[in-house]
Image 1 (cartoon, rainbow, N blue to C red):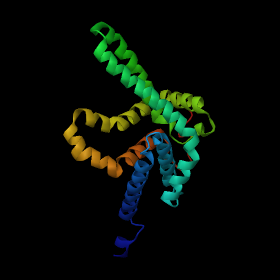
Image 2 (cartoon, rainbow, N blue to C red):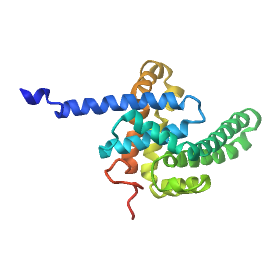
Image 3 (cartoon, rainbow, N blue to C red):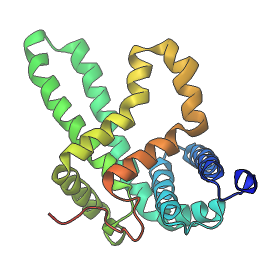
Length: 214
């Protein structure tokens, strides 16, 4: 009977980790609100998730804020650049759909689509903890693209996970408002980041780069 109420019981351990993900999700939402700090918040969340996998996170709030402050200066320029490129791509798609004739549109859209895929590949890896910590903006982007292409199947799965709420918003509005949005407000972002971290190999004890040499 004692084992049922033992805090080391697998059920209580699972519920504890679930609560940690909820708290981490809330910290991410609060620190990502200024928009320009989304990249920093993502990086901090991935670092804490890696420490959780290693069992070395200690205070969740302290670990998150330490990672957030430490990565602020190097991640804000990267995210601002990615955000600017994304806005340009979205603007190009909107203008092209309204201004170009059918023939030119068939040429322009595949080009924009390829650029968007490259953007998603870089975004999926650039804020994960690893060897990019000692690099500048250009080095971080190049390493993220190289790693994404080298691990393309995993990268595509990570993109699918990250795009799930966007797809629901675009095609299933009622489901998005009733189920998906509350889920992501509670735990969705941290859970998605954890799944991407597992796919990328960043959730193993002692892992730094998370990509095995082939």
